Amino acid sequence: MAMARAARSPDRGSSSSRSGSESDEEQPMVTVVRAELVRGHRPVVVSEVPVYVALKDRDGRFFEDKGTCQNVRYRWLRGPVVKPCFFHPHKMSQIRDVAKTHLCYCSKECFQRGWHNLPQHMWGTKPDDVWEEPLAEWVEVANTRSYCPGREDIDRPLRLDILPLLKDGRDAASGGITITTGTVIPTPKEARTRRMISNGGTFNAEWLSKQFKVMNWNVLADLYATESVYPYCEKWALSWTWRKHLILKELKSMAADIITLQEVQKDAFDDWFRPQLAEAGYEGVFQQKKRDPIFHRGKYTAEGSATFYKTTRFKRVDKQVIDFDRMSVQEIRNNFPDSSQEAEKSVQRLSKGNVALVVILEDLHIKTTHSSQATGPSGGHVLVVVNTHILCDPTAADVKLWQSHLLVQHLNQMNLDHMPMLIAGDFNSTPESAVYEYLRRGSVRGDHEDLHHDPCGLLSKLNLSHRLCLATAYETCNGREATYTNYTEDFKGTLDYIWFSPDALAVLAISQVDDESQLAQETALPSSTRPSDHVSLVATFMFHDTPADANEGHGHGNSGGYHMGNNPLGALTGQGGDGLQALYAAAQYL
Image (cartoon, one colour):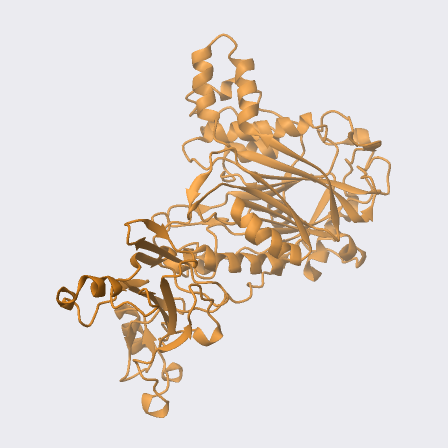
C-alpha cells in the first residue's frame, strides 16, 4: 500500500513577518495536490512504478504531471530490507520473531503457526550471527519522475519525494508530498511445468514433426480485475504490471503453435501481447467486442479476443468476424415479422456485443496427400481456427445458447463444412449446459433445464440442431473435461473448451490442469502465481493422413468448397482408422 504525506515547512507560520515580495519568492510555483501509486500496487522488478501526480499552479489550474513540469523535482529513495512472510512469500511481513524461530510473518496467525508448529531445522538464523541493517537507512537511487526497480531493490520499500521548486530553483519548504511503497517484489518466476497426458498406444517418431500445439486462455482483462470482484487477491497481484509478466511467461513456456486468448484489452494487445509475442515468432489478430469503449486508467479501451500463430508453422490466408448482434437482428426480423414490440424486446436481450474471430491458416510444414483434403494456396493443410467468448451472465442461458447457435449457423454459411476446424474459447457454460450438449451432440433434448428460462420466447423459434461433428480435446483424450477451468470464490467449474473436428484431426495429448489443492493455495484465482481467474488449456493435434471418401463424412452439411483465388479448398472427412489409438503415445514426448 502506498502512503502519501504532505511535506511540512520547518519554519511554518513565519511568513507573516516577511515582505510581500519575499513571501512571493518563498512560495512554490506549483503545489502537489495528489500523488499516488496506481491502485496502490507494489513495485515489481523491471516494471516502471506507476505513479499519478496532480499539481496546481499559482493561477489555480489543476493538471497531471507526466514528467514535463519544470517547477517540481522528483527523488526516489530505497529503504531497508523488509523480509516477506515465511508462509506467504507474496506478502510483506508485519511481525518478526526474535525469540525462537527468527523468521518474519505477515499476521498473528502465521506467527503462531510458526511458533508452535515449525520444526527447528526450518528456523532462521539468530540476529547475533548476522549483520543487522540500520532501520532508518534510505539511499537515493534516482531523481526522475519514473523509476524502474532492479534486483537490488527486492524486499525493500521505495520512497518518492515530490518537491515543488521556488523561482530560483531551490526546493520549496511546503507544498510537496511523499509516497512510500510496499517492498519491491521480483519479476515472476518461470511458468510452472505442466505434464502432458495421453491415452497410451505405440509411438511413431514421425508424428513429432507433424503435431501442432494449441493453447486457449481467458487472461482476465485489467478492466475486470478489481478488488471488489476478487477481494481475496493481493492488490499488487491483481495489477496488470504484475500479471502481464506471468501471462507472457506461461504463453512462452507452452510453446504452442496456435494461441487463442479472450479478454484481451486493445491497449494490452498493441503495447504488450503483439510486440512481446512477435519476438517469440508469433503474428496476431485482434477483434474487440462490439461494445462501447470503457474509460480505464486515463483512456478509453475495449476488450476482445486475440489469436496468435507461429509464423514458422502457419500463415494466415483469411480472417472473418462473426458478429452475434448483427446476426441476431436479422434472425429476429425473420422470426417476428409482424411484431415490432416483441422484436425490439428480443433484440435488446440479445445485443450483448459478443463476437467470434475466425482465422483460416495454412500449414507450412504438412502438405496434403489426398484430393479430398482441404488444401491452401501453397499446398498445405488448411485449418479453421475460431476464437470466441460467449456471454458470461449466469441468468441468460437462453442468450448463450442463441449465440452458440449463431456461431454454428455462420460456420455452415461460410462453406467450411469439410475443413478441419478448431473452436476454442470461454463458453461460460458447464459440461451439463445446453450449450455444451448442443455443440457436442448437435441437438438439445427438449426437457433440458436451460430451455425452461426463455423470457422472450427466443429458443422456441430456433431449430436447435446442426450437422457439424465436434468433440472436445480434454473429453476425447482424458475421458472427461478438466475439473476446473475457472476457480473463484463465487464459482468453481469448467467453462472453457477446445472443440475440434474429430473426423479431420486426431488429438494426441492435453496438458494437465492443476488440482484444487493447488488452485486454493491463496484462496482462489487469480493469485500471486496464477494471473487469471481461468486456467489455460493446451492440446496437441495432428491431421489425419488417410481421409475416407468425401461422401462418408459424419453428419457434415453441404460439400461446397471454400475458395481462395483459384484454389478450391476440398473436403477432409476421414476417420483415423485402427491407428488412432497409437497416435496418443506421442504425448509423452511432447
